[in-house]
Image (cartoon, rainbow, N blue to C red; front, side):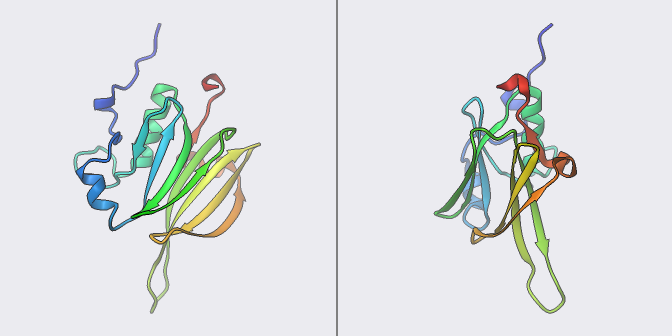
Length: 155
């Protein structure tokens, strides 16, 4: 019995740099992921016609339903890009974060991690300017909600 795969039109991920992406990429940082089958997916958080506000959650569902995984993440703000990839990674994770205190502006950041040898190596990027501010190691079980795994059956 074959698995039911999600059809691209039903998957809720963004396959192209459409008008929505063009509008948001001038004012905010986005991720662009390359998948194991060569598809490129664009972060389109908060798109009104999507079932879930988080493009990463939608991407995770799409990958799990279709036996795919992330092979590269590009972080992009306007013309500035940074690449996060490792062909041997067992998975990738992504989270947004914000730090704030009274009397000062909030500090926004992206947390991007690569799972390798049972440890997630996290990078903390200040956004929108894309400055790598910290790295640390984390337990993958603490990140299961945002970790897209490369399953053993996927190569």
